[in-house]
Amino acid sequence: MTGTLRAESVSKSFGGLQALADCSLTAAAGRITGLIGPNGSGKTTLFNAITGYERVDAGQVYLDDQRITGASPQRVFALGVGRTFQLTRIFPRLTVLENMLVPANRGRSTRDHRERAMDLLAFTGIERHASALAGTLSYGQRKLLELAYVLVADPAVVLLDEPAGGVNPTLIHHIADRIRELNAAGRTFLIVEHNMDFVMGLCHEVTVLDSGTVVASGPPELIRSDPRVLDAYLGTEADDD
Image (cartoon, rainbow, N blue to C red; front, side, top):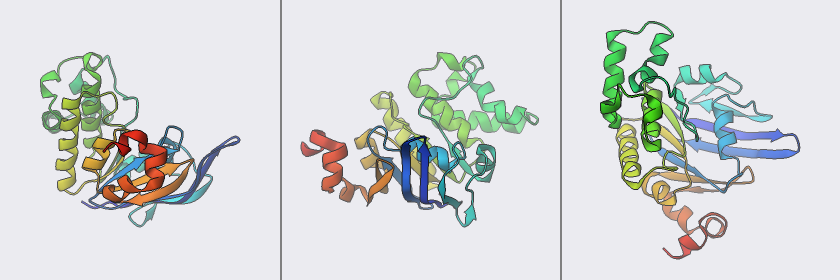
């Protein structure tokens, strides 16, 4: 399983707001790359541009050597790029298992689909909730369901939008362990996250956005000590480390 995701000189504006300005990022195959920055820095806009939810004004997006700029979200997903959202997108009135079978039901649900769905629910640790309505899950469990749902298509690259946001510490560790296990099997990750302990303890590389522009990129230990990052993003908490 391989998958290098590249955004090259991507720009995107909304009216008079420049959300992304000549923004370039690489999520290398088989690596976990973090994407950090203050609110409004363009992180989710970049996710949306990569996955086809927003059309870019300039620049290109590539999966390995294939240009995917302007492809629909469905096409990007079919090519092997899955994503989660900052606010989980599940079907609250369906059971957890039914949520997992939604992609299969667009064609034909089979025993194989059900077995794979249950295997992924077991992998994420929520298989005991398979018959429960998804709307009854905790926020952290919904994050795990969304991750399991994305994995149904066996994507080479997974984009996670704040997987630790609003999640209790026990589940945060559980999510991190699942990401490490998937990455060890060769899956590429690009992760937007505000929890710096999560990012610095999990990611191989970290890219920092400010006002839609990359201001720093490198391994966590260098990013943690970069004065621009300390001043703008990590603040006094980083100074106390």
